[in-house]
Image (tube, rainbow, N blue to C red; front, side):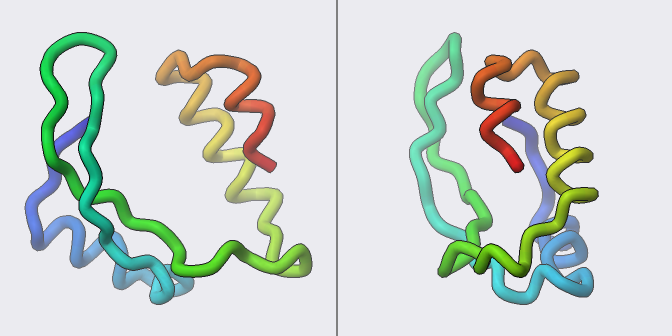
Length: 78
């Protein structure tokens, strides 16, 4: 988890191509510590197969690997 201001979130999710993402309230459960409320920006509908973006998937896999996410989860991002 990491913290962003409302202004930072606004800049991030108003970038071209991210218009369909919407914030959803979630309860974040860290590996250590107590759960806390958070926002998670998600697509309302999953992308269609023809909308796949291999470059984005590769960059996301790289970031997840650097953050020590489980390798089976990293591989599931495609």
